[in-house]
Image 1 (cartoon, protein in one colour):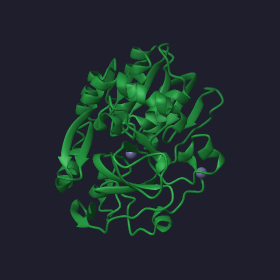
Image 2 (tube, helix red, strand yellow; image 1 turned 180 degrees about the horizontal axis):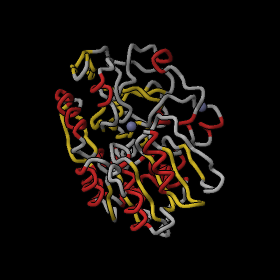
Image 3 (spheres, helix red, strand yellow; image 1 turned 90 degrees about the vertical axis):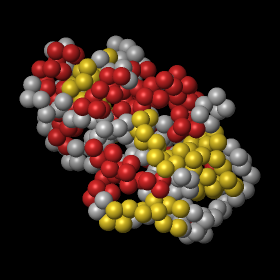
Image 4 (cartoon, protein in one colour; image 1 turned 135 degrees about the horizontal axis):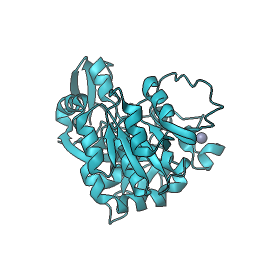
Length: 335
Ligand SMILES: [Zn+2]
Ligand SMILES: [Zn+2]
């Protein structure tokens, strides 16, 4: 099978890998829609490797044993390889599992964990069957397109009384606009790229700001009220942006950290009385709600997905992502 590889700084290639094999509760998925996330950082910096991606949707091609899915089912592939046995997994919070398994060792497979690939192996309970009335493209937004911010809004109980700031409008943050708007909140979008700010407005944000404007705080307060926003989500993982998000949030408000990385300086947290949430992906018991969300925001998803590329032109797709002039970008591993 073909997989995408970064071979140097802004260099890439398709490479041939052996067909993955499956055992036990693993299934082989033929990927047809591969949403691109933050892998372009690796391409830009030259982090070489051929095991890229964590988002995919497609069709079950093989199962090792009868189980939760069968050959031919359309499915969304959830991230990571959690144990499936610990309390966190049992409670649906598998993403925080501390005992992840080694899928290639378990399956005796030479590869299969990449999603920038024609096939991926995954435990059957981490494959979400796609209902007939939902397209594979829309369903694939259950990965990072909508997923992390879906949980951020859930954890902060965002509703129509809230003004919410979404900081960072990349492959994860733009979905935060969709999620917060869907819950009826007034949404403020913050990003340095004009393209993304405009897309956030199209997706339903009431205002969009450039974080480099010296009077950002005044602008946000004039839109949100003098106390600041009720809730904020950081999707950048950049400490300066995380600190800015804390600064924009009103006393007794809430903030969710969705972007990875950084050593944020919290300062004295007592006067503000903020509640902070660390968020990764969403709880698997929320699957019916996620599917309902996807049905109810179809038209926004058609705006959120701005580009499609054959995997044979993955380098062009990464170059586009580096410009910031895109929403969610999809790869077709078979073209
Ligand atoms: Zn576990
Ligand atoms: Zn992602």
